[in-house]
Length: 160
Image (tube, rainbow, N blue to C red):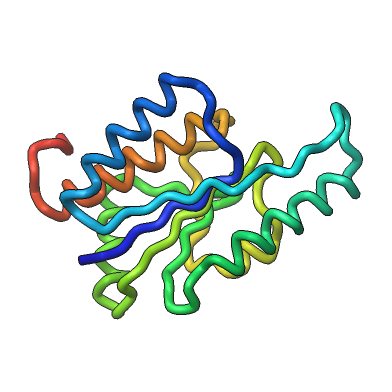
C-alpha cells in the first residue's frame, strides 16, 4: 500500500477547513497510509522585505527537506507548476508506485510559497490553477484531488 504524506506550512484555524480536511483524510485511509504534518509558518512583519521573505522561506524549506525520506517521490504545489487533470494525477501516482516509490510526499507552502531548494527536490511541480487560493483552502483541494486520484485508479463511482 502506498504511503502518502502531506507537508503543510501553517496551521489551519477555521473550523470549516478543518472539517473538510478531516473528511478527506478519513476517506484516504481506505486507499493508502496517509499522514499530514503541519510545520509552523515563520512570522513576518506586515510589509516584509524581499530579504525577510527569502530568509523565512529558507528556514521553512530546511524544515521540510530534512523530513522528506530520500526515496520518496515529491510533488511541490507551486504557482509555476504544471496543471493537470485528475486522471493524469491518478496515472502519475500509479507511475510513482510502478517505479518502486512506496512513499509520495505532497508539499504546500505558506502564504509566500516554497523556497527554490524544495522545488528543486520535487519530482513534480504541480499547480491547481492560475488563480490564487488561500493555502488552507488549497490544502482541502489537494486532499480531495489525492482522494479522487485513488478513486479513479480503483474505478469507483466518485469520479464522474
